[in-house]
Length: 339
Picture 1: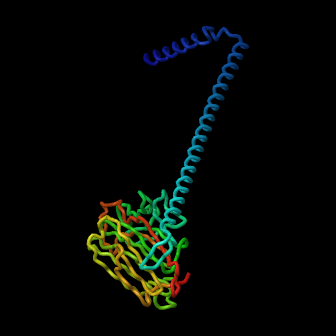
Picture 2: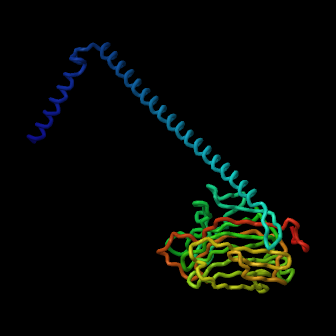
Picture 3: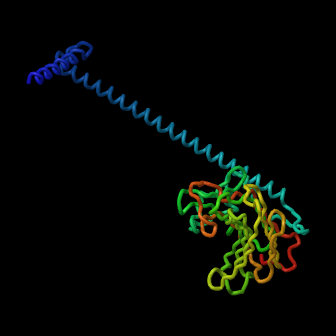
């Protein structure tokens, strides 16, 4: 009880002191009603002015933040456009510098090229493959990107299903026959299959037996890092009961050496001629030859016949691609592929 009384007296004493200090020494109790009303009005005016100033400063701050954000977005757009224009200019220069080439003694003209030297993947040439689950991975957009002048088809994640990079020219560039070449580095780990292949929408057709009305042409498949083995392959007549396939495995010491190698196909109406580092490695003729336009695919995949990936190695490169070039004979072919 004594402590309660003491506390109450202390509070009253404090209030009296504060009251005595207010009003510039004037005793509030001595003010007339009119003076008290005027004092209250002035306090209200001062409070309103303070609130107005606070709102003004807050609005100024908001406008400044909006202006800073607008300028940042404008600068980002300008930078993006400058980079895209730089990419376009570079692509034009690259195309002109590689416009003609003599292949197997025949003059060819460039029809498609990407050197991947730009800032961004050229979406006028490529689309990301749909998010298709393939063995131990899913093809995902975030796993295909440009870095240091190369296309990176990465493998990311720490468990199945991994994310893997895959792009294609479907609906953007398609050609029947011609010379198709990439310069690439193959996977550096067991469990990854890197591939450069051609595909067409009419592949499932069985109307014509064989590849004349469509085929899958695997210019290079690299699933056997531990074997130093790669392969070429061709599939026709869809993937169901009528499916037919032929493949040609090749053992090449050092092919997975983290160095650049070229993989190419000279596709004529008479046959396929496959090349690795400029050496013809396989010839295939007859019913396997496709005569309809195909689009290109560059893909990385995980698992399946490539084996099991050690998850402690990710993220890693599934395949690196320096360039892709596609040519067509200047004089065409005696037996024309369909255009």
